[in-house]
Amino acid sequence: MGVTVSGRVVSRVGSPMHMFWGLRWVVVAVALMSSATHAETLHCRSGNVLVHAANARDAETVCEGAGDAVGFLAGIGLDVAAEIQVQVVEQLPPEAGSNAAGCYVRSERYVYVPAATVYDRQKAGRGGALGLIPYRSLIAHEMAHAIADNNFAVPRPTIQAHEYIASVTMFSTMPVAERASLLDMLPGDGFDAEEQISATLYLLAPHWFAAQSFRHYNRKDNGPAFLRRVLAGHALSEQQGR
Image 1: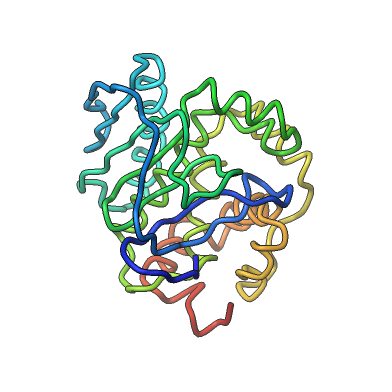
Image 2 (image 1 turned 90 degrees about the horizontal axis):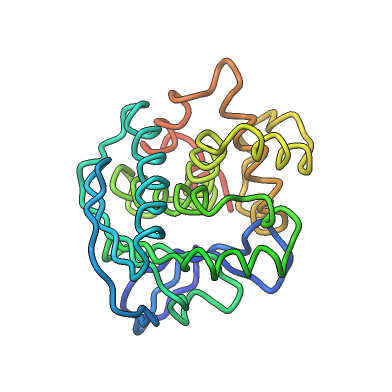
């Protein structure tokens, strides 16, 4: 989340490296375009979420994934009242990169995700960790970025702060069987110290970073209290390095 051009701020998932869903950056983009077909709008039952999609089933699944994130984060005290819009597209905005699986446009509170059939082709083509992540979990991950962005008390959250929250939300709301399979693929015991939760580690191994974040969150002394410290800027902040 650190390349600056001019215009809008975009958080993206994508990288030519075979990592998690790919490398995520916050990018200021000159223009944002998507190849959305004619779409209808669905107002989700959970949260203040509007989904624009050409396919009714996609819209329903997106609402389900959005609801997962809303329910989890609201349950630990985050404000989920701000409106977030989700656009289901055949092709993500070019700023997201050719290997992106989804992106969140910070300045617009707009999430862009591929149609389910497009995502299925991405998973089949890449395998690995991506192949085990359900479409609904992709939505929960991107929604977590949007919701967290509305709750940060600091103007420039770090990469590791954003990704910790999105990873915890994704794993916490993932179906048990898929989560167990993914964690088996990414073994570990969780971070032992806050200093280990770094942007450098995320950029080198984002899939493992996500699994370790989830394990760290579920330790006795962490959980929602630690996540709220992250939002307040008291943990995973700039002062701890990149």
